Figure (cartoon, rainbow, N blue to C red):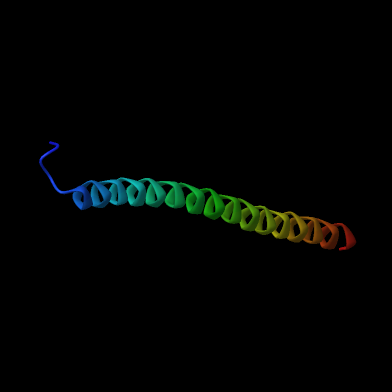
Length: 62
């Protein structure tokens, strides 16, 4: 193992660091996406609640 040139060790360390950063970034992006989806879902559900309330209000008027 020690018979390899020193720059090969640097390349291997670079590959490992790159893989770690890729996994870390993917996890962070997934969390951000899930938070965005959750927020948009809540906005959609609020619109449904408002529409339901509006329709019930219109039923009571007739």
